[in-house]
Image 1 (cartoon, helix red, strand yellow):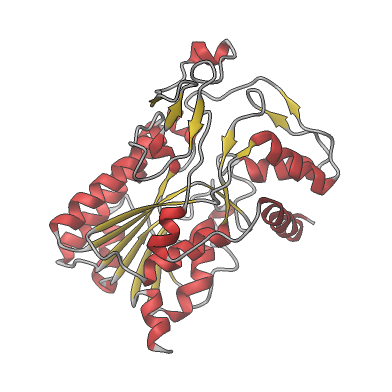
Image 2 (cartoon, rainbow, N blue to C red):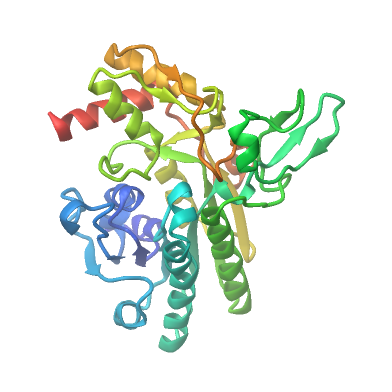
Length: 361
């Protein structure tokens, strides 16, 4: 094992939630080059049918079945490993689900983070580097620009507003892509609030212990190894299933909701860059996306085209707590991490469909 590969992986690495979609793909990239690559994951059946670990998790991964909300589970891992790097992926992620299961999201995302830190304190150990996968949800609706050039940051769209089909904020107002430097976090759903809490808790702890923190605010991640059974993993896998079955994909609101869809390989390459190169100062926060704004309708049409499925149709349905537009610019991330996204939406959609075929056919 070369020293450069060892340094790239961060020596002894603890990955919470590391048997999931992102964690498994990251392990396939880096686990073999680490001194130890230990995954703590509870194999929740919503993500892992039958609570079984993914078949393609590398043999070099030391998988410990446990929960980040359990002090005993964390203590057993932390005291044994004393990690150089902690990659904190463990989280509940469903925006809609967070409204109906707020305690579950708070326990895993917030208490799970504080339990991790308390476990490190009990072990008398401070890792050299934390890497957190945060979310574009911390921005809420972000910044909007009026027709006269003035900007404002709207809050939550009310149920009454959505019921009346008033999708946008103001006449002629347009969404401005989010940036760490230019968009003040203002989450509008429980999930986003818990992710921002993770950022703030880790910033306070690492700052007090003179160690490093990298926060990656991920846009909408999709690609191979994404759960096909979890209804809260995202619309790309849902749309793909419907199109494969020859159905017309339903579009919420007017079909013009926008997101930044970023392929899993691009997300993992950003994580690899963050792990390999610690921030020069205490903390860095970056946006990780494709840098391309895509409407839900355009995504659906691309997936339908691949499967020769019927044209998608607008339903006018909506989700409470959802944002109208979410996208980002990645220029600052390119400079900070020496990284860039490489997979186009068309190529990414095709890659996902090819993988799904291997799972379902």
